[in-house]
Image (cartoon, rainbow, N blue to C red):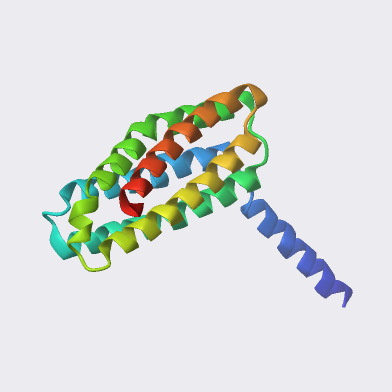
Amino acid sequence: MVLFTKILFLASTAAAIILRRDATTVENDINQRIGPQWTTLSNNIDGYPASGLQGAFNIHDDVQSLVAITNEATTNINAAGSFSEAGGTTILSDLQVLVPTFLGALSAIGNQAHAWANLQGGQAVILSDLHSLNSSFIGYVNALTAASPADLVPAVTSVETQVADGFNNAVAAYSG
């Protein structure tokens, strides 16, 4: 029984070491997962409605993937704990680079509300997708705010405000 307890302790310690996340993980989430997925979403939005029903499916799938990626990235932020000044600054810079992509995609999908009305149930699906993605993004930014050094919080809040305005405008186009 004692041997089993020791083995279990060693296994849990090894797992904890493997699962440790840090600012580099958060940076990689932004640069290798969130950014590319937003770019894919933006490209598919730009191709709609010319891309037809397949384009609509692609956009919906892109949003669902982005929600999952963002939720996992939020978990990684929470696991990383507080960022150093250097780590927080790099993470903030990486996120700020993506703001035009976020806003461009949200503006474009908002401008396409009439096209989604031509697809039965299309507006309802996009509205639901926008709410899901917004909720995921809010959770992400809240975790980022909590982990950032105090002097970086106003800049993180600025990103949050800009993107929240983009979501609000896009949602309004489908809520009318």
